[in-house]
Length: 57
Image 1 (tube, rainbow, N blue to C red):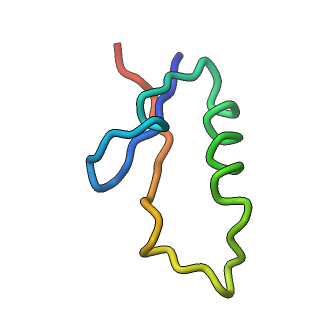
Image 2 (cartoon, rainbow, N blue to C red):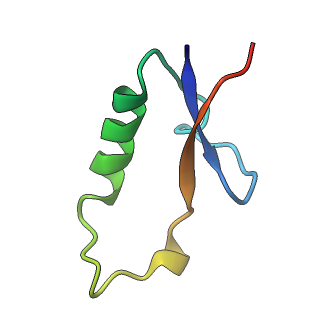
Image 3 (cartoon, rainbow, N blue to C red):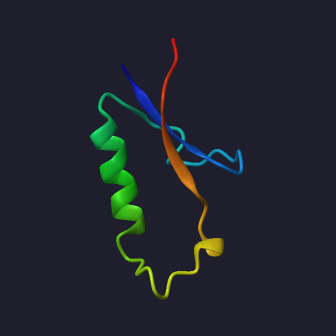
């Protein structure tokens, strides 16, 4: 089972061009990206929304 990260706006970038052997590896990457955001002061409209999905063979 392999995983990839997609953007909800359909745009491809360096994050969406990666493939992961484990869900946790993809999650860790997204955690690094969003780690500096605090829920109370985050402006989520300035950042794309990513989702981890399983790659279908």
